[in-house]
Amino acid sequence: MDRRAQYRAELRRFDPARWPDFLREHSGLPGPRANIALAEAVADEGDPASFDRLISTDDEYLVFCGVLGLGQVLAAAADARTRAAVEARLRDHATDARWRVRE
Image (cartoon, rainbow, N blue to C red):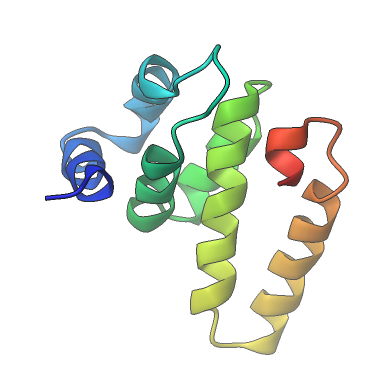
């Protein structure tokens, strides 16, 4: 089982409201590299409401995870209205002052 799959299994054990503490603990920050595998697992396991909760924080890594999750929402969106709304939000985040969020 790869790291992303391991993190997915761990995230499923928690209510998404408890994810922020887990994410902060395993973010890899402060340090030179954020935990991308964990962020990808969040995008896999989360839903729009959990992504919104992460984005609403001031924590750079949590916002990064939420924005990555929005990309998953966009990829899965079936209707044009949803796609347009999510694309607009992603464009807003592309100009975020925090480089990890922009990336």
